[in-house]
Image (cartoon, rainbow, N blue to C red):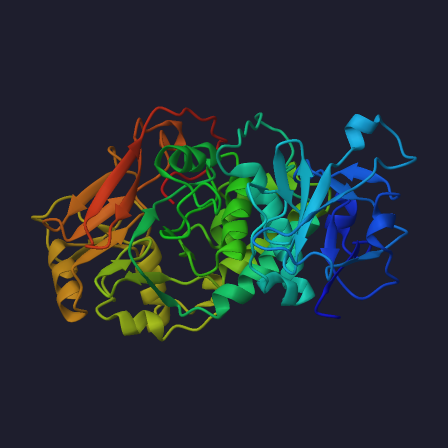
Length: 474
C-alpha cells in the first residue's frame, strides 16, 4: 500500500460489517478516483447513523496526495449521488475530510468519523487520529468492531430499555463467540493476580442487573472514550456478573466489549457464579437458551464459560489493596498461593481436598464472620458443606504477611451496598440493588483515588423481577 493512499472496500467477508453496510481498511483493489466517489450510492450506517459509501461492487482508493493541508486537511465537495432510493436530502453528504489516518463524513454541522476506532463519533475537527487499528490482525479488528457497536448502544448517554422476556438484540449470537474468543486471549496474557493502578473504581456483584450497571455509569462516570473517564480511571469488576437477574447477557456482553476496547483499563475478576456448574442452575444458562435463537443458546453459554475459566482470580491495586470475590477462608495466607494456580481453571475438575481446591473454594466462596469479635475460621453453613467463614484476625495477618493496607471483596449482599470489617481493614461491596427481590438493599461501588482514599458511591431503589430458583445461598 502506498503511504499516500487509504484503501477501503465493503466487508463482504465479515457478517457483522456486511450486514451494516460499513467500510473497513483492507487489501488493495482496483481504485477509483475521488471524483467517481460521488457517483456511488450512499447508504446510512446502521451502527452510527452517518452516511457510508456503498461500494459492494466498486471498491475504491482515496488518493491523499492532494489533501495535505494543515492543520485540518482540505474538504472535498461531493455531488449528490445519482441513482438509488430516497430523496437527495436523505443521501446528500456535503463533503469529507481525510488525512493519512482518518476519513470523516461531514453532515450538516456535524462531522462523523469513518475510521476504525472512532467510527461514528461526532468530532469538531479531523485532526490526527490513532492509527493502531490499521495494522491489527483481522480477528482483532472484527472483535473491536463488534465491541464498538456494543458500546455505542449501551453506554451513556444512550437510553436502554429491555422489556421482560425480550430476546437478546445487542449483537448477533455469532458476535458473542467472537468476543468470548478475543477476551479469552487477552485475559490469558494477564497474570492470575493482576496489578491495577489508581485511580480506579471497584464494582461488586452485578448479577445480571444491567440497569444497575448503567445507573452507576450514568451517575458516577462511564468508561466511554469520548464523554467518560476511562482514559484516566481504571475499572475493576469483582465477579458475579451473571445469574439471578434477567439481563446477564447484556451485562457480560458489555463487560467483554469494554475489555476488548480498553484491555489495560478494565479488569474482570472471577466470582463463584463464573462457573458452569453454578450458572447452569441460577439463571444464566436458561437465559441463554430462552433469549437467543434455537440451538445458539447452549453454544453461547459454553463459550462464555470457557472465557470464565480463564479469568484472573484476584487483583492488587498499587501494591496495597487486595481484591478478590469471596475471601481468605482457612487456607489462604499468601498471594503466591493464588499465583501458583493454573488456567484454564475448570472448578468442577479440581480434586476435592487438594491445596488448589481449597484455595479456589476459599477465594470464591468464603465470607467474613458476622462481627469483629468472632475470630478464627468457622463453618459457613449458610453457603454449604465444606465452606468457611474467616475472622478479623485472618484479615490482619494476611495483610501483614503480604504488606497490604486493605482488602476488598464482594460476594455478600449487605444492606448499604458496602460494609466494613476487621476494624476497616476489609470492605465488602455489592452493586446489585434489591437483591433477589427479597432484600431492600442499596448497591455500591468504590472509588479509589491516587492517594488510595476509598469513597463509596451508592444507588438505591431499582426494582427487578426475579426468576424462581431452587437455591438461595449461592
